[in-house]
Length: 429
Ligand SMILES: O=C(O)C1=C[C@@H](OP(=O)(O)O)[C@@H](O)[C@H](O)C1
Ligand SMILES: C=C(OP(=O)(O)O)C(=O)O
Image 1 (cartoon, helix red, strand yellow):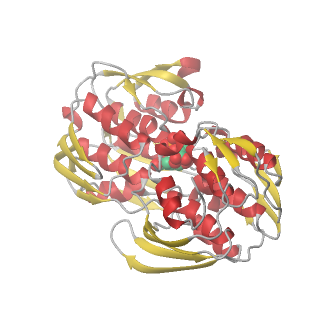
Image 2 (image 1 turned 90 degrees about the vertical axis):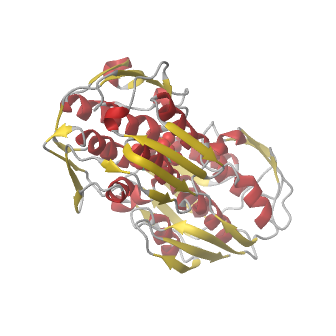
Image 3 (image 1 turned 60 degrees about the vertical axis):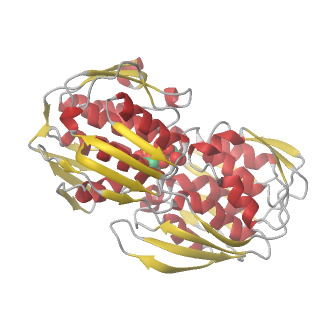
């Protein structure tokens, strides 16, 4: 795909549904009693993998565009799949489904694409094994393909080494089938969509700073879930609006759960002209966010902020190339185990454009402001967030940029290029 410079970005777009919340709505609806209706579901490839896995486990799920109906059969109603459950490119699907399958009485096989086969699973297989599940996979259950046999589970108190909502959610979901209480503690608080949505399905979940606990034996009752827009998708246009000259854009219905809004904190710290309105206050709050071309300065991104913006780091790195001074990103080793090693892929691709960016052991250091040069090929490396970051970079380069592997973007934002074209006054896609 050829990308051309944009003179300005203007207009209003409605951000598609949140990926994390869409996955959970299908999963929890499947193991609930009754019919769950989901609106504004994200029809991205990752969430479609979740639907297909639960269909294979015997759940009737019907999707019409962004409306999904799930005929819940209860945790005990799930049936063995006749074939391997294919999670595609989705880390959230495989890690959360393992938490659910740990509580079944049958065996399931799980596999995904090449990227999934390189991502570590022991962070989930280890605690689930401790709870009583049997899991077999390459390198002691660390890599796919995996076979999981559910069993009689006991609750645990688990101290996770990483702040990961996937790990926390898998353990809490297994805890539903466990005897007694299950508690997960993490170094920093990760996104809490599981805790919020389980409550909507009638389950009691206790939370304290960085711990979450659940009592085993509780059942889920169907709920209607309206998915807010995905702030991780909005981040690409927030960044584009801040750096493309003469821009002024509004993104509607963006989820602003505080465990996800690190990107807004960073944009403000960098001096972005950003404002919020139309705030709604349901279980998952949403708001309209407006941004204008801004005079940005460098900042430091570290510590408890990292889990609150982990998926936004590639686009924040691009933003930092257009900010005055140095931006330091640290404590972000988790970037190495995403769809790609996002430290190396970000540094490799932005270096091609002339950015002053260095990889460190746990992040990167970026010196700005540097003009971005085009006239070359860049690659998503099959990673949707790298692809979208580079598409935004293409709005800034003097010469045309050629993006390879743009199809990966459909994993989380199938309408990305349509929205970009709507906002872009002069880019020809
Ligand atoms: O729970 C979730 O929905 C997610 C959690 C995060 O991963 P980790 O739990 O590995 O940090 C995030 O990067 C991913 O895109 C979605
Ligand atoms: C890391 C991501 O997703 P997952 O872990 O579900 O593959 C992402 O969407 O950036």
